[in-house]
Length: 232
Figure 1 (cartoon, rainbow, N blue to C red):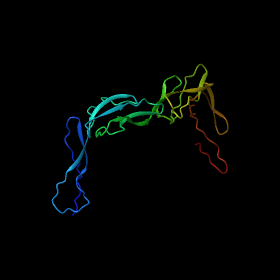
Figure 2 (spheres, one colour):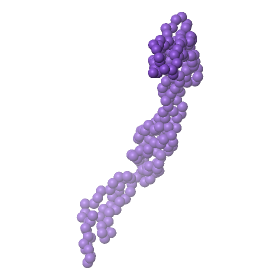
Figure 3 (cartoon, helix red, strand yellow):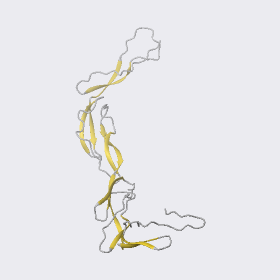
């Protein structure tokens, strides 16, 4: 019969500046067991204490701690190092690039980060300078044109027709302000309603972008030999 070595790693009490590293068992597990056995663990002496240097995102040393062999650092940094955002990414600390809880040698430790696309604000302004719409957009993506059309109050007999947006709101790389542009147009327009025989039944002066009033006159059209007509 063969025996299988224990999966539990044995330890030996440290003293002074000495720790012990488990090497092996003093038995050949490939031979058949023919009698009682007393199997001893074998250790080698190693240093008990090690230095762990912590570096920030710019590779500058900002904290040092001591750790015992196979143990964690005695004092972790009180704050995690930050990494400056770039134009396209924000960075959030996620851990260290080496194990600081099972130390077996002197180590230099650097921070790891999760990165997310930065978000920027795109503001669309109305004709009077007030905010028409504000959107938060990820780096490299585009804002959406507002559903509401900007307007500008008339001046004397001049109205203003929205002509488009001034400012690039596609492929966003920073905060953006977008302003409307307008073309001058007449403020007043004449609307004439005609009946079926092209006779004028109503004439109205209507302000730009406003509605005329439908005439109250009943609209009729004389029947032909083939058809009757109903105003729709």
